[in-house]
Amino acid sequence: MSADTPRVFFPILARKGGYPKKEDGSYYGYGYYRAHVAADCEQRCVYCDATDAEVEVMQIDHFRPESFTEFEALANDPLNLHYACARCNRWKWDNWPARGTPHTHDGENGFVDPFKEDRSEYFEVKSDGRVEALKPPANYMIRLLHLQREYLRKLREKRLLLAELRMCRASLKAELQADLDSGRRSDPRVMLEFIERWERFEALLG
Image 1: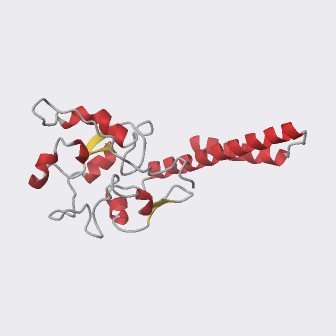
Image 2: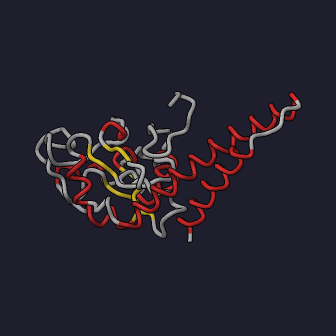
Image 3: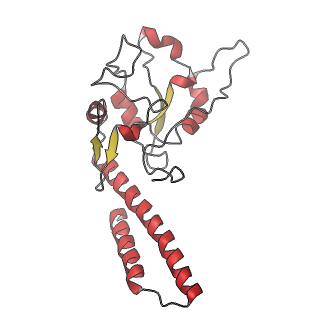
């Protein structure tokens, strides 16, 4: 995949900054930054990667749990706020295995910081939509957040097929245009293959 090709899953995230503050220099309540955090996370749950168009409820997650005294000062800090679907946020809750360290996981259990690490180095999405752990703490996250739940598996499978269809459509369009320009007769098998892929996609939607 080239650097210009959009990722189907787990895009590279970067903070956009520019978070407003009160006159005294302190942050507003964390809910004030919902739109900023959603934009930072590209409108996706940072854990299961579902978009806000694919799930009913998205919430603001305190990455380092505000319930722990050492993280109380981060309660309204936008840099500690992540976008998460309601289910992932509920299951994550105040779990933080790396407590007492500056890290986000202890080498086995914990969480990948999506703004500091490439999640595709930890998770691989298979052709049937299952997600596979490549290295810790991915297994912990898959278990804790139920990332193999059937709804997510089907969602990922649909995304993969849709991406495949888009690539096939672009290739087909270029091939048909080349045939038209050169006066060649188009190969009907190419169109048939596209139609068969589209039927697979429709079956998934059904």
